[in-house]
Image 1 (cartoon, rainbow, N blue to C red):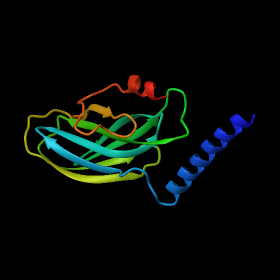
Image 2 (cartoon, rainbow, N blue to C red):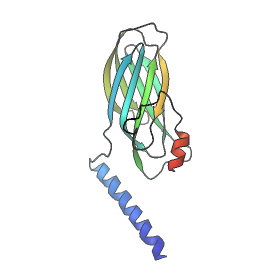
Image 3 (cartoon, rainbow, N blue to C red):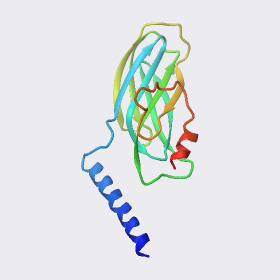
Image 4 (cartoon, rainbow, N blue to C red):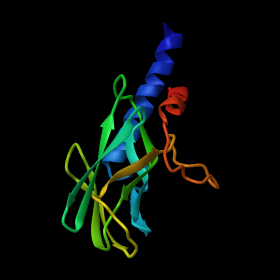
Length: 162
């Protein structure tokens, strides 16, 4: 019984310390947003986004005039884990007409705005703007020197971490 109790106590204490420090303002993730126009596509990067370790982040796009709201949602195959990770996320908005746009990255659950970035699209042609490819890094972000993929299915990789 003692062999089980001590590891359980240590895990509980470290989890409580981590959650307490995060609530005290010591966020473990940098949480930065940047965007760039490449042709008639806007690439949006949410680096070091803080989400649950077991989450698969899905995106939704709402376009109104010169504003693109890119919503991020946590989804789970089974349920949330007792940990937080820093993910690098990326999404593209394709077929964007010429012009200057406000891109807002938003927590789809709470409505909180992570960041707002202005982007100028200078090259056409275009169609109706829509959500293009998305990607999510493994827990901890992309490895140094590794190019971010255009698209991915991280479910298989994340299953290895569980």
